[in-house]
Image 1 (cartoon, rainbow, N blue to C red):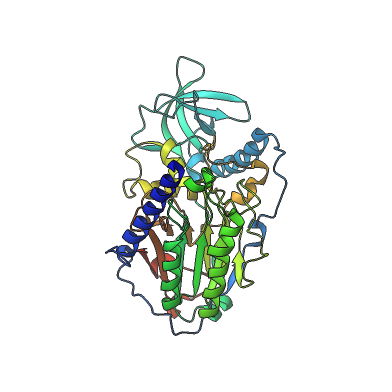
Image 2 (cartoon, rainbow, N blue to C red):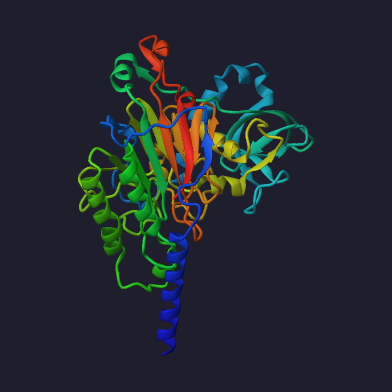
Length: 452
């Protein structure tokens, strides 16, 4: 009888959450707009022209991950590459080389980084220097960050008082060939990005996901990007093993079957799916992560690896589907850093500057990073749009001419979460000069964060 009472109480709670969700008063509310001067666009009645090209050498295939190569060797390869770039940078060369050192930021203990515990690890010498930050007016540092510093050695041999920090220079933006841009740049694009979890943690009704698909069937965007987890390992009922269905059965019933119906009702809408390391219906829980297996999914769905790097027409998208923003925020120390940027902009900028989608070391306990595959985490160019799903508050910002977006989670709280809607207008003909043309997406895109 006691067990029956517990089950009835849980069912009552599920019904209560569903009732509050369907009675929510903020349905469809636009929570934030980036570039509000740029207009929206109704794509529901238009022919779709959405060409998706996966960046070939950034697609992770299935691999055996029980064997780890020596982590330091993999870290040293990346350090060697970035240190050479810093050394060749004109700002770094302006000072006497003996006062300049390139290294990796680390902590002098296993605790959280603070301004008294900062070390600079010099991989070539397998040496660590204690850093004094007292003379630095502004900085933003985290463990694993590769930087150059200018300073003076003090009394102790391994103590460096620094007065300047040198960053890795930014990568260039991707430039589109003129002919490709003319061919593809004919009408505005509507792109929607939604990140899981897609169901509330009291049950498997997938109410927010169902509502999203209903809305997308009405609006018919050119592209719908869905980011896992679709069946999350953090779901309380799965942790308690209090469900009669397997993760595979839940995925088929609430994701595969519903996407099949959506595709039939909305022909022409492209769908991209990116897995999460928290997805139980996936063969791999390590990062970087291979795509979902295509078997069972509708054939029109494009499955990418995690992270994902691809182009939509001329526009470069990069999606980093681990919560790197939260992990960086938990580790970063700063003083008067980047006054033109708020904290979320600054954290996003770390990724762009470090040219890497998980520059933090040691990693968060939440991430099982396979270092021998870390090349898949490297950026080739600055993307036009960088998607960073996080438990932190949703945002859309322009950082170093890159549109950085945290769409929020679709299922969050009792009234549902948020997703991002991106409208990208064609590049003006007057700006199409030369054989290769900068896309200038940050100047012609509008981003809305919308409540489901």
